[in-house]
Image (cartoon, rainbow, N blue to C red; front, side):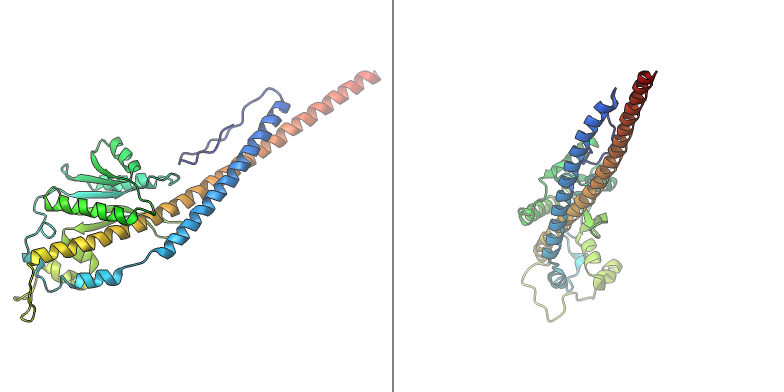
Length: 315
């Protein structure tokens, strides 16, 4: 008996070679019963994954309006002239955040995320930040040290987002890292998952991706002579305002990323279970053919024995 592998490897079904057809039939019957039960289990797990995907898809709320309003607070500010780690990383190394899952049956999604993350570490000083213990194991395979957070669950998603945000913010403010890029899975649909990349810091990169209306002005580095205008009174230093608003925005962005990553995890599990279900059915078909072959051998053997006995009796 060769059970189907649900962890991502290719199943190689084989039936033991036995001395007699009767022995083969006995084993094949047990194997078919095993794969029948396994198929029922896989279908049940697939149904659960689909239900979880659909439920989470309905719960996910887009905070685009909130981010648009938050983004509007920066429009009067002369971002180019502000000296702050969130705006100007200087020569600080990059930070790569890789979002992986501790759940199983993902069909290699974690490896795709980590491969993309490692590919973005062009500077040897780059720091790898991994969400998920499975991602940490893959990083160890690459012999790359990393800061690790536990995997995402439905219960800890918000707290995890705040914990990651606080860690990244402190690392940037201390100049341990400068630019921040997040590598995470994205479910384009239930059947298609891709690896997404999002530049979060420096803040100018965030502005380019978050607000196309002002991205050209930032890219050209052209601002009015009086960036704050004569009717605007600032009671807070622009650098402090940048820091506070960026921290608020980063928390929301990390929460959105974790939501999308969790959705992609459920989609990948569904597809992997569907592939496993097909493998189980293929194995059952092969076992069925072997069962019929063994049955025919028994019938042929019995007919030959009957013919021989009859020949002996009539001679």
